[in-house]
Figure: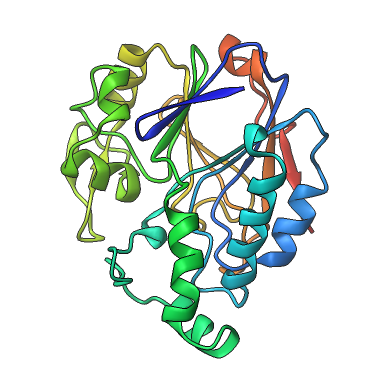
Length: 260
């Protein structure tokens, strides 16, 4: 099971043997269906955000996940990505945003679909964590994170970093070329994960980086995943043993299930 703690979902250690992790979907409904075919009834599912835009079936992906949430709420954690960052009036904080046009053509208008999207948005967490094992976010982490409570109630700057940040080779932190969030180096990953008692950071946000499988960086601490074919890469899910996450013994190649 898992417990909501503010903006974070904390997984009860020992409650799940396997965890299936989905990266960005970006409207790839077929990849979602194939990924769900990998699950057993006892698995925990974690989605890392960016459910719509770019691809053609964001509406259906969102509706499908809402339905799944109704059926297995105790086994499904949905994280927010930067492509779910809309204000209460339905205005996105990012561009381009193709979900609005998609809703216009499929559901009779954006403001006809927005109540459905809003219900979905309100169910999203900014992070999930398996104590002693892994921290799951959409984007990145920052040097300001010193304890778990900061993830439960992130301020505006940390919220932006969780949604927009990316790992980089250089030490320290620097402004992101995206115009939001920061790049963070291997020293930041080591310090923050150490402070939180975590072995891994598992994130998405860069499908092109993970176009052929998971990208492992920062001395094995940071793993980027992708579950969409929209950018021309291979969609996959991570099928992870919870105990291996806590032991720091994950074989990322063996844990990758491609969705071809």
